[in-house]
Length: 117
Image (cartoon, rainbow, N blue to C red):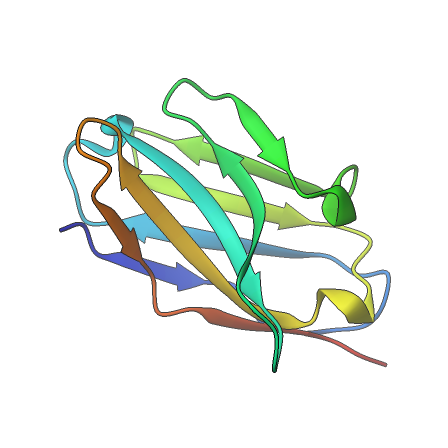
């Protein structure tokens, strides 16, 4: 099972930017579909953005035009560039990996993003 380690969270003012990164411990990273989810306090975990092994992306309506997901298969990493952050973006952000040939999935430990003045 692939291990995922997120980094890049923190405290930012409204309108600011953060970039989250997720490093995967696998030599076959290109065989995984990747995604970012988030979970605000008291809420369910929701999809933020996905990127397939082929590079096709999908975004939640709430982040379209502000967030960008990308992957680097040579470094086994997936990133989430977040611009125009709003207080409603405050949540723990989780990296998710799904092996395309078996649907086996893994979660990272999460990284806190807080948007506040």
